[in-house]
Image (cartoon, rainbow, N blue to C red; front, side):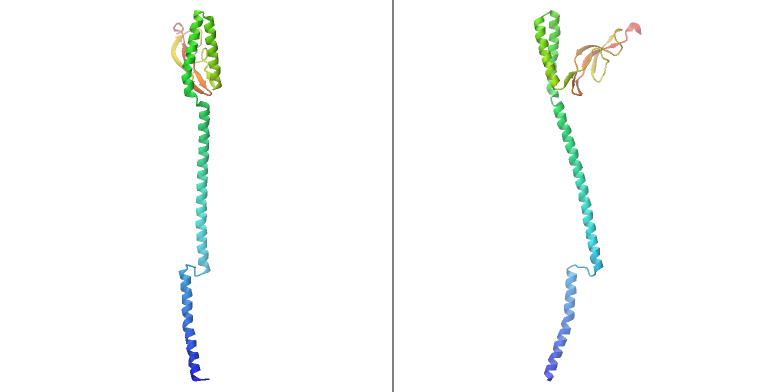
Amino acid sequence: MKKNDTVDISKDAVAAEATEPIDSKTEASEASASGEPASLEERIVQLEEKLAAKDKECKENWDRFLRERADLENYRKRANREKEELLNYGTKSLIEEVLPVLDSLERALNHASEDGLAALVEGIRMTSDMFVTALKKFGVTPVDSAGAPFDPAFHQAMTQVPTDELPPNTVVEEYQKGYMLKDRLLRPAMVSVSTTSKKDI
């Protein structure tokens, strides 16, 4: 072997030995820059933390879904109630305007009966009956008054009448009819109420 060849091989070996640790440092530096854990245990810890965060996020989303679903259900119930209210009592203001017309018809009927105008009485009675029938179709019914026990929920006392013919606190006379709109009081009946006669006191 020539002397020069031996020198060249030695230089190659030194160069290889010099480059090897540099490559190892480069790989370690790249692993550190990529954020990858240095060990399996650290990687497991990171995955568990990510899983816990996702689990928390899932629970928060589920709670939010339940709240929004409850709000939607409450809105649906409220909308149904309002719709039912409108269907049942939407004609209230109209009927309140119409009732005075019926009152006038009934008063005319009473006065005509006293004057003996039979044909006029019959015509007014037929009109009044048609009116009452039409109102019943919308759920309007009269409040029982004359002879019934006085009930402040349905009657408005205009005066008191001392009498022995009726028990105390009984409706003696009805001045103006009261009406119900389905299960609600549309207006109270104006009445006089019996009291104990002074001679019985």
